[in-house]
Image (cartoon, rainbow, N blue to C red):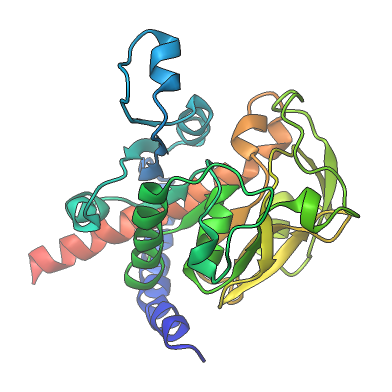
Length: 298
């Protein structure tokens, strides 16, 4: 077993013990009103166009931002969204990370293929080196040094793949021309553009209780080879991986290639992924409170 997988698995016993205590507390109290703090990674743009177009920016000004859909989806599911900035030094975020109950890796630009051992191919889109460097360190810290639930969306799924040694298709139209069109930028964001098949032995099946789901599609990159410790649990009709999770299934580390945050408002049947994620984050939140309480008593 890979040493990183050992680190992840060795920390599960404490989490499982605290989960049992947490659910016992829920049963005795008749419910749980914990609102977990969930970090959502900001997008990063070195291009000044966005600020200038909105009339709030200056020439050569870089921007960090986040689509409102992520905020709304987490809040609607019962979480407290906390935007995580891209920083020069990952340790800048350490005090904040210790207070978070979950992490959502959001969508955005393409990933630099040098991180997974390839040179750029034709069709590679915008890359933001500052975000890539920051988020790869953050993803590895969250996966290997923390126990919080993780949800990856679009680029977030690709990030988790690269952070664990996997590879990507840099551009599906040129590398998989026989496949379906996965990049439909002019479609309504909540429109289900193609179905995905869900593996029954998976957290995603447990979440959606169906073996097929209609999803939107706004990506031209995708996972080629999974990272260590992950399994594919959601596939497009052409075989492209649309969802993945840890092989053990004990820790909530789930990622999807599509954008549920764009769909969950108008299409309520998409919402369970956020409900499940936030519920697991509530467990993490209560674990922290229980551990803190035990340390105080000791």
